[in-house]
Image (spheres, rainbow, N blue to C red):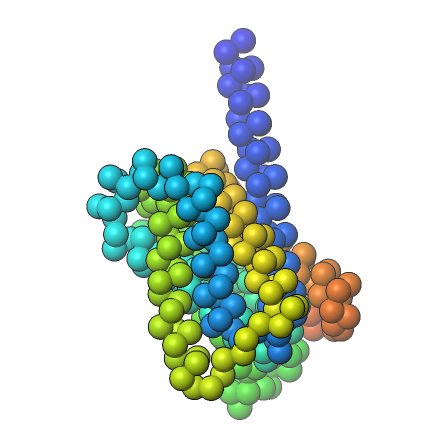
Amino acid sequence: MTDGKSETMVINHNTRAYLLLTFTTWCWGANAILGKVAVGEISPMLLVTLRWLSVVILLLIFARKYLIKDWPILRHHIGYICLMGTLGFTAFNALFYIAAHSTSAINIGILQGSIPVFVLLGTFLLHHSRITRTQVFGVAVTLLGVITVASGGDITQLAGLTINQGDFYMLIACLFYAGYSIGLSRRPPVSALGLFSSIALVAFIVSLPLLAIEIGSNKFQAPTITGWVVVALVSLLPSLIAQVFFIYGVSLIGPGRAGVFVNLVPVFASIMAVVFLQESFEIFHAVSLALVLGGIGLSELGKKN
């Protein structure tokens, strides 16, 4: 009887995590679309600053009790919080929205599929976790998919180093978020909202110097009406709901299993880019998407074996 109850609890536990993480990746896929819509409607650094300012305000209104309750523990992890906020939120978002100016939403979505591979490599290098031959092969296949989309389906471009600048920025952004994902496995023993509130506050503060640089370089653009709509949506969906759900999902099933759900980002992003932005889904997109998802599938298979 006890075993039956335990099995039911595990199933419910997993189901909750799967639903949370699936919606999280839909929000991230939508972020690629919103990033393209933002081009010409609001400058990138202003979008990042307003995004995290909005999140901080919402959190201070609705979740400040968690931050206050967790502060005695959080204050002993200031370095960790600053690093997570800087790399995982501010740097990732800044490069993400800059990339949208010179690459497609489909490319952005597919390149985000490289995050689980970077997480796997990062845990191997930093924590000396075991990696199998199947996982190595999966990494190679995924990277081939990344190269395919980054080169626009023409591998000969790599010899001349003519990879799209936006794709390059997106890959660096993915490295930062992979580091953030690995860091979540070492999170202090606090609530998801308490941790997220502290990291979001750091993200907003760190974004201010970047905004100042943007203003000083005459690249600042005040938001249009559409720009304000984008700010509202990115603040609510990929910034607030998705991040809290991701932190909670990682706490339920761990960073390795949770990271696999990032595979859904390129799928959601590609579908929405075609439907809402009328972007062309080329053959090389299909090939790269299959390679990225197939490679990550092999990595997971290797881990299970």
